[in-house]
Length: 185
Image (cartoon, rainbow, N blue to C red):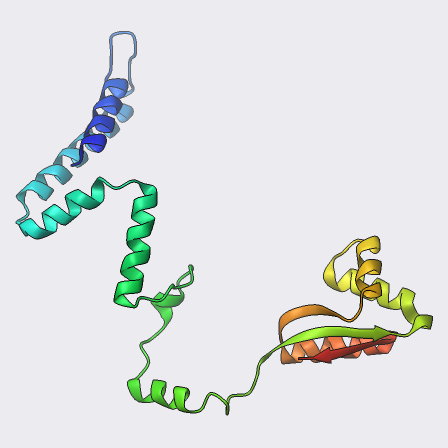
């Protein structure tokens, strides 16, 4: 156990120890004793486990790094070992490893894949239906009335990015019905 961890454990033990002025209930006392035993057993297991001296030296060096140095270490290891950044939230756990042949086929034909996400761009509006378009943009984007008016007046402007095709088509139909010209890119 590293020095800062030992010092923290010592401080916690001194704070938690029952004194004459502080009487603990039996359940609290038992919980403290089990935590104390758990801490001691973890340290004993770590000392009893046969460790490679090289690994022990690396662990000691890493445990002495501060937060910024640790972040640099992680970034360097990712770059050196070619480890991609994975999104947080169980994506990596649920994904099955892809077969090498399937990966080669995907790389060979990226142009054949159909585009699924589109950017919607507000090109122009009819002057007579400006109020309707402003109201629709306000509800669609959740902007204030003033912000949606500025947005509509600054056309051509990107309305939404990375929208699935079905949703993009619905938005286009809605805006065309109120008098706006929208394109999918």
